[in-house]
Length: 331
Length: 154
Image (cartoon, rainbow over all chains, first blue to last red; front, side, top):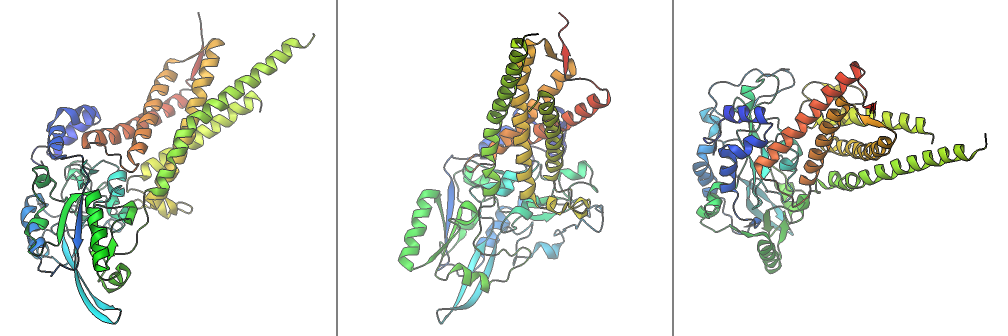
C-alpha cells in the first residue's frame, strides 16, 4: 500500500482538499477498502502453557513484514529543540537484528518469565506485541488519523500519514509503538520542528488477513500457541481453557477489552513481577479503560445544545414578560 | 438575569470556551512538551493527553450550548429586524462546521465506532482547518470591529 500513496502525493492531495476529496479520489480509499476485511472483530488466543520460546513467530514476523520496515535515506535530521527531542534510529545493521524487545524492525518478541508460584518454579515464554485493543486509544486520539482501526479490529499505523510524535506510545497502556526517526511525512514539512519519524508496531498482518490468510506468527508456530477467530468465540475458548487448566486470563478486560487474550497457568501479577520490563518490554499489569473518562463527556456534548435552547427560550420569555409589563403600566 | 447581563455572560463564556478549546485542541498534538509550554507554571496538566481531551470536550460542550443559545436568539431577533451580517454569516458557517466535525470526532472515540481511514483523515484535517480558519476570521473581525448582526434595511 505504501507504493500506492507516497508521502508527497498524500501531502499534495491533503492540502488541496483538506483530506475529504483526496481520500475518496486517490488510491487510498480503494486500497484501504480492500484491506479492511470482514466486519467480524478478530481476536487471538495465546495459550502460554504451549509456548516453548523457539522464536519461530519472531522470525516469521520479520520475514513477512520486512517490506513494511522503515528504510531511512540518511541520518535523521537534527531535531529542535535538541535537548527536548530524542531521535530513535534502529536502522543500523546491528540494531536491526535486535529481537529481545519491540523495535521498528521487531514487532513481536518473546518475553521470558522465571519465578516461583505456590512453591513450584516456573518458566514461561510470552509472545508480546500490540494487543489490538477494542477501543484503542492510539487510534482514537491520533491527531492525524495515522493510527486507525479496521472493521475487523486490527489496529494499524499508516506509515505515509504518521508524523512520529509518539502520542500513540504515550497513551498506549503497554507503550507498544516504536519510533524510527528520519523517515515519513514530516521530512516533507518541517523536518526539524514538527514530527520525528514514524511509529511502527504489529499490524496483525492485515494484508494477509484481508486475503483470508493467517498472520505469519500464527501460521508458523510449531506448537499452535496462538489461534485466531471471531472475538466472541475466542473469548469463550479462553474461558473454557482457563477453566480446564485452572488458568488465568489477561486481555479480556484490560483497557476495556482487547483482541489479544492470554491464558496462563500462573497469575499475571506473578508473571508481571517476574518480567524484565522497560523500553520496548511491556508490562502485564491490570489496565483500566483509558478512554472511559473522556467518553463520559460525550453525554455533556449531547445535552449541551438542549441546555442552550432552554437558556435562550427562558431569556426571551423573560424579556417578553418585561415588555408586556411595561406596556400594561399606565403612563 | 437582565438581558444585558445575559449578553455579557454569554460573551465571556464564548471567549473563555474558545480559548480553552483552541489551547487543548493544539494540545492534542504532541507539541506542548516539546516546546516548553508544559513547563510554564500551571500548565503541567497540558502534558497529559487524556486530561487535554477531557478539557477539550468540556469547552466543546460549552460552545455547543452557546451555539444553540445563539441560534434560538437569532430566530427571535429576526422578528425584531436584526440579521446576520455578511461576516457574521461566514463566521457562523465555519464555526458550525467546526463544531459538527468536532462532534463527529467525539462520536468516533466511542467504543465500537470505527471510521474508515479516508473519513478519519478527512475529519481530523477538516476539524483542524476549520478551527484555524475560524480563529483567523474571529481575530480579523474583532480587529476590524465587524459586527455579527446588522439591522435589516428593508
